[in-house]
Length: 231
Image 1 (cartoon, rainbow, N blue to C red):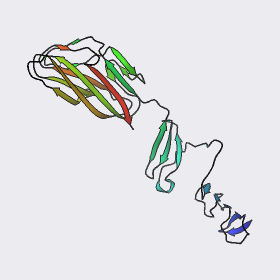
Image 2 (spheres, rainbow, N blue to C red; image 1 turned 180 degrees about the horizontal axis):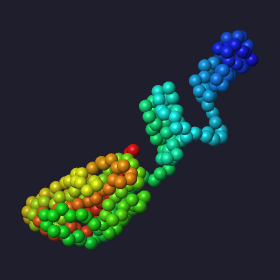
Image 3 (cartoon, one colour; image 1 turned 120 degrees about the vertical axis):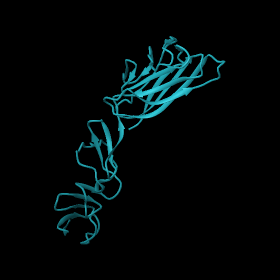
Image 4 (cartoon, rainbow, N blue to C red; image 1 turned 90 degrees about the vertical axis):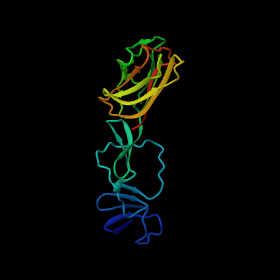
């Protein structure tokens, strides 16, 4: 046992030479160092740690900063483990299911007015993991970036079928399908990655048939899907 090491208390398992780095050291602030005489935390280990039981990770509200880079905490609001990057807390894992959906028209055609942008309706869900699709719109309850895809087939006598993805009532992206005038079916697909806030943001699908009044109903012709990608 050594005393006087920076006014702390050291425990050695060597020859006891005063000034040698002790196996365990307790400083005047109560910080414990294993293999170090200058602990920077309540417990500071210079080396690897092996645990056969559980590690209880706290849910501190401490701000992340450079001195604690690499620290881990449990965040109770999002149910995630987070690591301090030096500038902020970054989630590692989550037990929250990530929303995704796929819907189609189940072989039922939809009648529209030619040259009028019209909301597409959906009768059948292939899947809806978080029950976030309802009333022809997708409103995810988990914030993040989503891949949204809309495929539309128009029965048309002209050359244009326009598929549009809307966010909160405004067009986000659109795709124009064109073919030669001898064909009677035009297919087009719109796709985008969009950031959703997890509360009020909504996604809808619209179509404009420039030369007819029918949107084809087979599930492989007209469908709408979305999936969570990343925070």
